Image 1 (tube, helix red, strand yellow):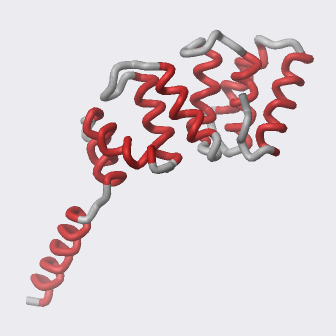
Image 2: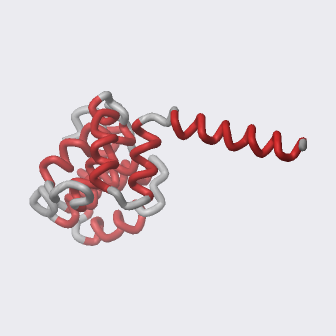
Length: 161
């Protein structure tokens, strides 16, 4: 009898959580099911209210065309908002987009700047991508990218571009 009561209480608490989950959690569940259009619809309001993770994810989804048509300008807009709040994944993705010429002319200096910033924020992929970008730059060009990154961090990610 006690086990039945515990199981019922657990089931009710899980039901209560699922019925009170907000748009972030609901969007995450949609994303996990690969229902990207539903995730975008739920995360858009969260992103518009200033949530940097939602802004970053929307930017990435626009960059890859997940649940929305691929749209680099829209991706860049969301990623810049998130990056300005210190969102590491957005900073890394901006670096990738500069490195690959997605939505921007290919720019290894800007890519290096964003990879340096993302690396300082703990992004595990940044070091590898930074090495690729750095290989395309002269020492003086890389020094400029490094100064840009330092200035960006000092300004708390404002006015980085």
